[in-house]
Image 1 (cartoon, one colour):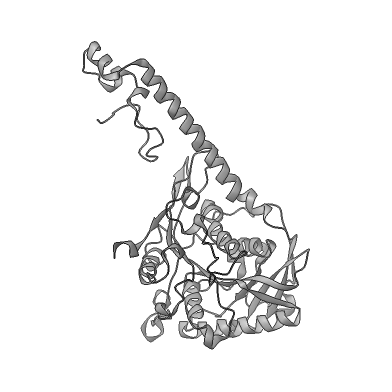
Image 2 (cartoon, one colour; image 1 turned 45 degrees about the vertical axis):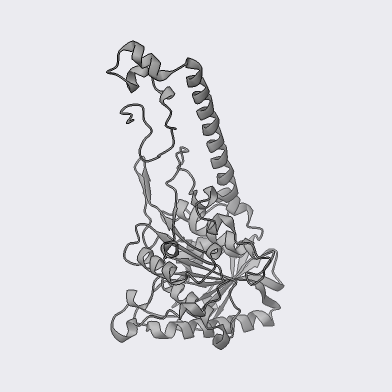
Length: 403
């Protein structure tokens, strides 16, 4: 039966259950005689029970939304930030520069969780990702941010080597200061070209002598051929079968990122089928529009700018800030939105948290359901608009399932 009036908007299928007792008989069966309408509708009590059930379901849905909003929304993210500020170490010049962002107030000593942050092409200025860097550092992670290039003309074929060298120098400096990576809690985060760098480093630990990642989070993945042509465009991806099958790999891409992130994410997801099924995911972030406001899910959607982290590569070492005061809330930006808080950041935080109890190499490791368990409400939920209207849900794609 097709209901032509009183139906739920197509944009939110299932928001109103398909229950005929919600609509007056004359709307459902306008051409039937009155007696036949009554017989079709059944006993009035049935209608009351259906309405009661639907009201209960709506209340349950609203309660679930409030729970997720409180657990993974902006307020919850701020509550995780137990350090009041961030210290900054800067080493090297040009393409060999590396920034290290350290939790401060209180300061960090001894073993610590590390996030090796690999930016996108020409994203040398940490300002582009400052809000996320600030969040990661203030919740207790050491964030290592190698620059790896000094211009668009840098060859993609040398960026992995540049990254590895810069990260080794950063680790040596941190060791002198009494800070070392907790091998159980090392995550590689890569955006766009940085995803290719993360993959290559993860597969070549034996030669780079870097801490082995316990998980990869790859946002809008790319490769050399997206930034140049000819011989320089040769892929820098590793042989993906060289990655451990136990290594959790979360791929997150926007549905509007049709030139780079989404097709490359699909390609990558189809090449890591040897990874355990409960440790790999391709999560697709949707754009949405509501009451004149639009959020896009293009290639730049993982960007999270913060002007406090504005450091141009030409800035002399002596003039780079060594301390960044914390702030309440997040800097207003069109680039900082639902897809960050309930998407990219949610995934990264959940993966980091999952390593506290056990490394991913351990039989005791439990992959976070909010990231890897396909179709769970928390995985798909992306918050609400200011008036409470739900934002469109994310969805999961699994190229390996069709093989």
